[in-house]
Length: 127
Image (cartoon, rainbow, N blue to C red; front, side, top):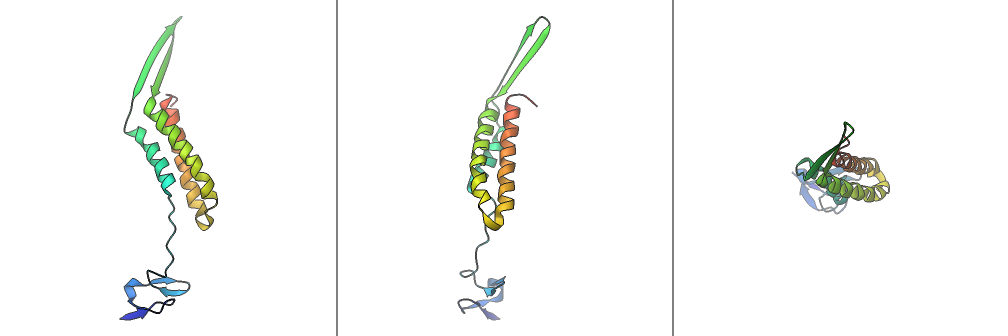
């Protein structure tokens, strides 16, 4: 059964048309759904997840007057966490101007920032 696009009046099957407030529209006339995750946020999230897989660590201990001080560093977590945090901060500003998708985009950018900060804390051995 053929239906027509409400905007361009070309014939399509009902499965090809998308229901919108303006009527049934073809793939060429229907507006694209905005993406919640931008490439910048995805990059920040990837940088934030890398330290869960890869590690380059060092640890040392010093004892003075019976008090032992431990130092632990994960250099992958420090560098990737810092990079994720910087990229996420750069993603927050465009997310604030995203219009109707502002809430989910800001939430994704803040989640990436939180992940970067978590990796920084882990990298300095503060957990």
